[in-house]
Length: 260
Image (cartoon, rainbow, N blue to C red):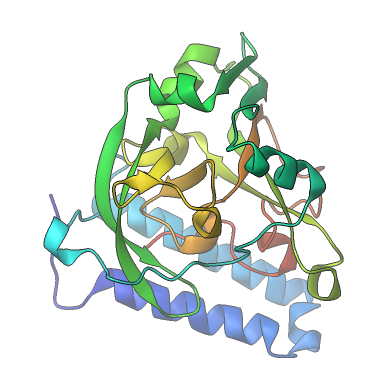
């Protein structure tokens, strides 16, 4: 069920996040380096998450659209042509030797080939992708629900987050050459619309959009939807992973929870 109100809540929160990101990334070094400012951002993120949970509930679905609504040109976000040697070798062989690994705090570490993932229960959804830069597109995605994989592996009680490790190293001049990664809390990881997509608009997922596998978490902004996923890990905390904020862009000032 979609909740309507006197304003577009998704649009309102998206604009607020865009303004917040712009503040952080526009050269306001004194603010972004301030401990009190960081505490303010953390409280705002917590408020956003709490408000969304209170208004929509943990199981509420993002709006799904019809085939007629699919955008004729779906813009590719983030990196679109990874040049990492390991990734290029896998892509050259149409990902036949690629395997998704799932480990960390699980009872049974697992791995799946692309064919094995395709043989598992799947979900198809037509949803809107909202980018923190302010643009949106509607696309059709098919993939395996993340919950199916987590259930197969058996997540241990101590796990609180699911971390996604990706193949793409972003521009060294901008980021220092770090690989992309992201994370979700268990509630969002187990959501019905959280899938690992291997098809887009009825075709095999193309490289610019994250082949062979990308995350779709439809109630959050686009930077949460990691592309080129290689490995998944269940963890108790992400403080010791890279910059310690739970994601590539989060380590650079974005909010960890990007709910819309």
